[in-house]
Image (cartoon, rainbow, N blue to C red):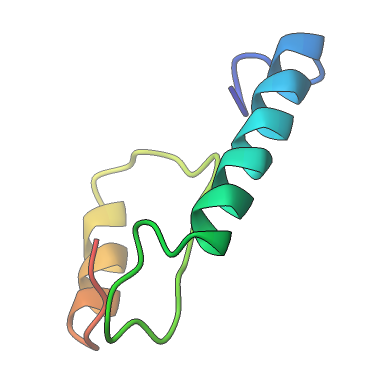
Length: 65
């Protein structure tokens, strides 16, 4: 949606609905981890092979995917 429908009304509606869903889940404690300290969300990142090392860096410091 971020790349394929950039600037399109369909993408705007998608993200508006996504925000509503995430707020609902937050308000009802759905999908949270017991010992979660931080939550990182990457949107529109390239799928380069080197990106694997980037995610491993966070895993080495206790991040979960």
